[in-house]
Length: 55
Image (cartoon, rainbow, N blue to C red; front, side, top):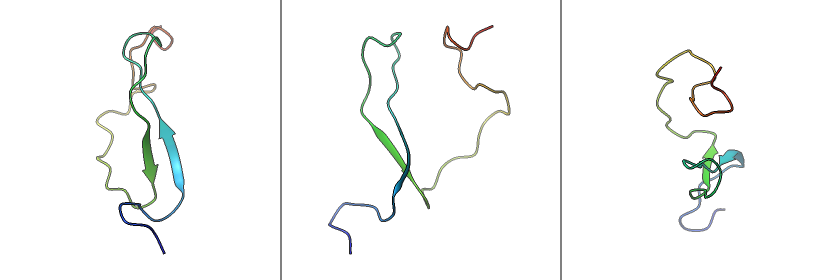
């Protein structure tokens, strides 16, 4: 039985996003089995353009 407002099942992935080079981070976002997620918009990997992944 789950409490009001909680989604059933374990958290499969959680992440926090920084848009300023790691100085601050947004809130935690949790993804669970059964979440209705949009399909990927591109097959490019990695899907970001941060300094770490830009080459």
